[in-house]
Image (cartoon, rainbow over all chains, first blue to last red; front, side, top):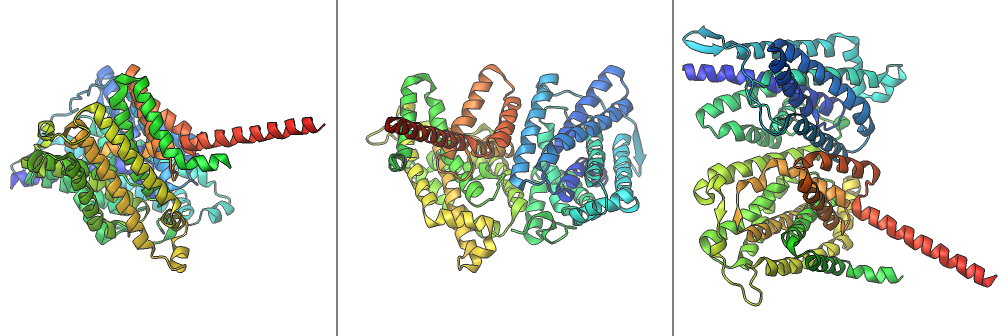
Length: 291
Length: 329
């Protein structure tokens, strides 16, 4: 019983990181109709920046803030210089362009930090006892931060005028521009927020995995699965998919170790074949999937 | 007029070029073998990407299926290399027969990602599920099981190179035939406007399935050729992270062209080989090169060659006209 409870909590923290990391992909993919393969750069740069700051100052909180800022800055630079040039191109082209940027980013990381993976100690080793189960406090912090991020993004999308303009811009870009809204600036703002969250995700995941140049690579497909499973253009869907996948990885991995690796793929395979729009996906031509 | 007649000999020129380079750089023979095999692999991807407009992140899955089917045959059942390659061909047919109907109904990025997940499932299958047969990560070794073949003992690298050249020549002519046939045209038309093609009476689904079959068979045969070349396979051949390499090679060569795959394989593998010989971090340079190719020369290397050719022909014609005019004066 205790094992299962721990597995569920660990799964929830995995879900939290997955959600934070997939947000940039989800917004780029669903809302701007672009397959943004280099979104994982913010994640790996975030982890590396955290590593540097922690080894210099010893403060993990400063590291996480630094990672968030770096993620936002990178997102801003990439969106304004590169992505605007490829918004109108077809999906395959954007995929390969952003993947090349991803490779360049991996090259830059290798150039600065070298190939060896860097270990990072967990910022707090405190353990909370709850009904005979030991839960590391750090995992609970991750879950809390992910929940806060979800609430913030939902408020931004549903309660502010920026979010309303953004959702309108997804439906019909020309009309919103005709109303005098600078849709480019709104896209940039949202994108920067999402990439800042990805940087935070990298910072939070750094103590749990080895910080290596290819960590973004490993995360890329899982994040993609999260977005596809949740349905394109739906933040809520991304959250639900992250919850499901976290449990598949954690509980599935407890049942049979290889499931942690292959489980997400099987879940996606079945979901897409049964329900091609994902869990909360919108059907229609808006996302460029009409043949 | 003359150039048009010579176009028929394109594949022969490529083979001749490989043959000449093999003797110019004798210690690079494995590199040329790899280019030839990779060309077949890129051709398979080009049918999907260039003709049908489907981007697949799962090409390594088909490659490793071919490689493993040939490897398992060679390691456990028999020693005839040709039969091993034929087994890979049959596995390719079987795969496309099973997967084709569901995959060809998917659209856009769903196709891409379903293939990516197939790729991960493939690695899992060869690494964990079939560990008793494939030895997992240690790989399967069978070079000593391969029998001597008549006429040309293709166990020797220098002889295997000639065998690969023959296969490549056949593949290039087959590929050229597909490009020139109605199938190639219909595929290209169906990727721009499938509804209109359906209206014209074509069964788009069946045509796509057929092209998918050809593509998968190309990939599995390339996998079998790889496994015979190395005498060993391990699951890393089918890893997800290698899926992008073949896409890059296709784009570098020029998508939807006959000779693009060859130049793509040459450009990509050459660049990788060249960069990694003095820089251990080839990702950086390959990424920048790809961006340059994509934004500046978006028709790829073969497109560049074609442009250069037509430019030369134009200047030649102008020069000729001018000289005729001056002579008249």
